[in-house]
Image 1: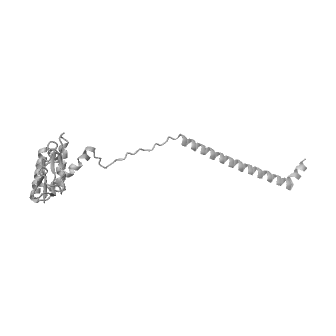
Image 2 (image 1 turned 120 degrees about the vertical axis):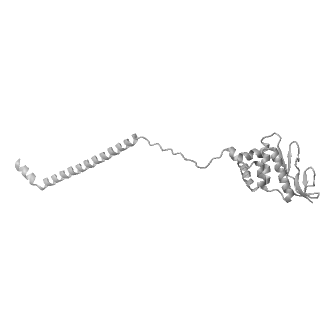
Image 3 (image 1 turned 180 degrees about the vertical axis):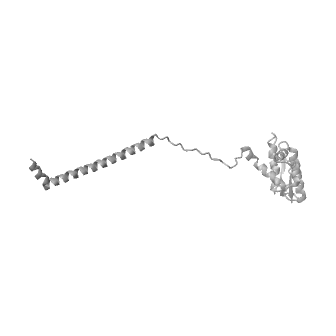
Length: 207
């Protein structure tokens, strides 16, 4: 038996068998190591996903936007045209005395009074007689604005009557500054009320 074992151990076939077995063990160990590493990676990925799943959700932070542009209320926007007319008064010192030389609120209070409207119309009519020229746009806007403010305080409104160049002269409607039968230029519109049309006839030039 020992002799057979000695012959077997010394044979080349036995050596080849041993090398083959070792190669198989090495390959198996390598596969086992790869399988172990793969299992570790899968476990690590699973643990990472579980951690993300249980992590509280971060809510977006709400940032309030501050608007720096001024926002005017409706009543202030409605007063804007009157404010612009008030500013234009600095170019007409002869008319400023009608409105108290005060602030905007004082101006509005004075402009809405009927007596001041009559006085303003008379002042503009006298200016037309002296210069033989129409009132300026600013002066006409001022007169119109005063009438508008007055109409907000009464049930008997007033208005400016626009007469036309080319109309035949009518003493009830026209206050002519020269001789003539037909209107050639309107210097100042007529002022009427609901009770008395053409209370102040239009100032005109005729030919």
